[in-house]
Image 1 (cartoon, rainbow, N blue to C red):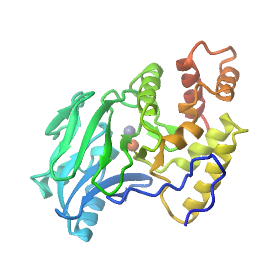
Image 2 (image 1 turned 45 degrees about the vertical axis):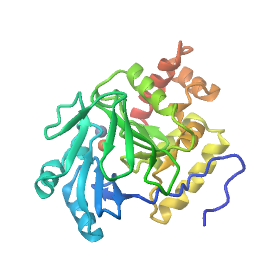
Image 3 (image 1 turned 30 degrees about the horizontal axis):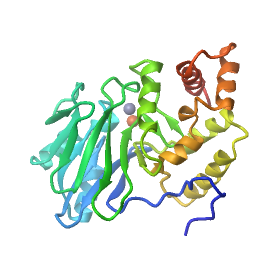
Image 4 (image 1 turned 90 degrees about the horizontal axis):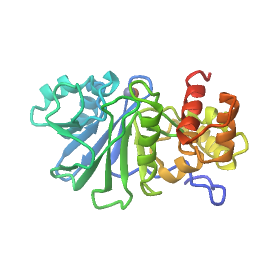
Length: 282
Ligand code: ZN
Ligand code: FE
């Protein structure tokens, strides 16, 4: 059972989707595995390492049918060659604008991606900023047992935070986060790293008086001490507590102003100031 939540605050302990499980990799990556138990097939998102995926597939008796790639970083694509060798039939879906080798089907903004046999149809959302090739996969529903929308957003939107802006501009990253923030409240946010605890520590520096944030920190600490992933979160929870989706909040704007030494002119400048602060935050 979940602990009782503060009234009106979205709960941080989100019941996970029954068809989606994490495959932990490296120190803090999650490779998301979609199961279709009936067909005994699986799809994985961002397999940075093949070994834990192969072990998870073997343990569950699943064949790999598809791979989704959000962006080119090695901790998201490093397992591709080995997985393609082990499962030559698996189809690799990735960004049209990517330098990644071994992508079979390349997709751009607005494209619909059908995964044959998975009862799912993803919409591709281009979200440049962390990298220029970054895309997200969004589905209004996965399978037939859970009505909640599902978002695989790689390293762009994190639980309580966002990815570093390595290749794009602050304006691009801010617009990309805006695209994700426009998705429905109940959307399950499957990001690729367990960074939530440190992200929320920074969020509290930005919005020290936020009650929803204090509650999320409390719930997150309980989850982590039980060894439970804090991913997925929901977009409602992110909108309530993630400073990078809250550039319209007075407290976030004031924090940006303090960092900048002048009043920010727009939401992009608020975002850029908070992101730059986070880059140096320990
Ligand atoms: Zn990355
Ligand atoms: Fe990453």
